[in-house]
Image (cartoon, rainbow, N blue to C red; front, side, top):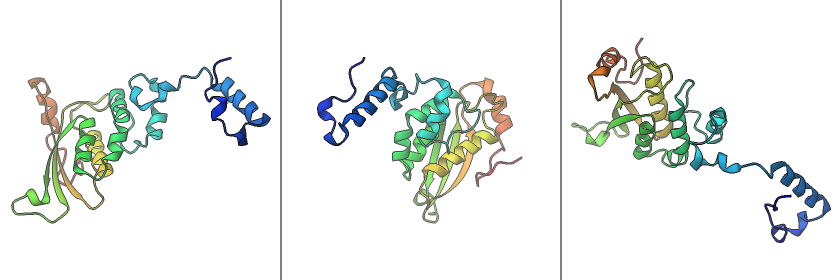
Length: 194
């Protein structure tokens, strides 16, 4: 039998009776060979892909993850879920969330505009620089825009009003056709056009 997980000296007397010891031994037998390190947040790169949906729910990032999202994007969101939740309501939290989706935001706050805008209003232009979904045909499509809007809504302060403009950022001419097809897909209010 393996070494007990909790030494007997640490078990309080109220549960160290015969029934408590029997339950502890039964749990030890059932869980003795389990490797719980596989479920730790720091090891999201090693977790079996079949467990990802359960971890998405466990780490409360289901509002950011969508069906057909690439596995590496989901693993990145899982690995940064603690930081993402801790930074909710702050501008750096929104920027961090968008960067996890492979987007570079250019953010203008109400007081940075000339003339100044209404308090609590912001403009953001997001540049998409990687594919988010399996079988994604264009750099910027309705699903990508929806993912960006969900990230912004899920991480910004509730009192903020954000106008979103989206574009595609690419390094080579090979992506120019995709960027040209995506050009007109998003309006300033963040709603996708058909």
